Image 1 (tube, helix red, strand yellow):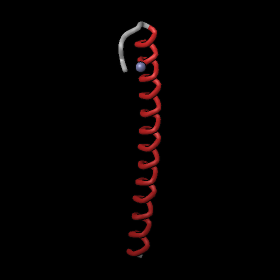
Image 2 (tube, protein in one colour):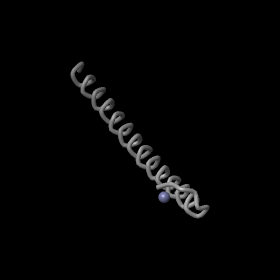
Image 3 (cartoon, helix red, strand yellow):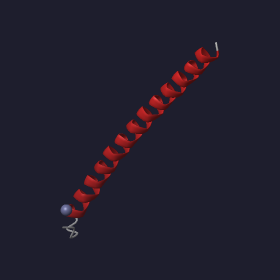
Image 4 (cartoon, protein in one colour):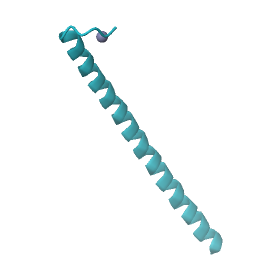
Length: 54
Ligand SMILES: [Zn+2]
């Protein structure tokens, strides 16, 4: 009985960790994509305005 409860709890912890990991991964990837998009937009503006950048 105790073992069953323990294994159930650890399964829940694992699934919560897995869900958290996937969620953090999605947020991280989305954040990087957004940062790259913002960076590209800022870069285009710099070139369009003739501002030296590289
Ligand atoms: Zn540039």
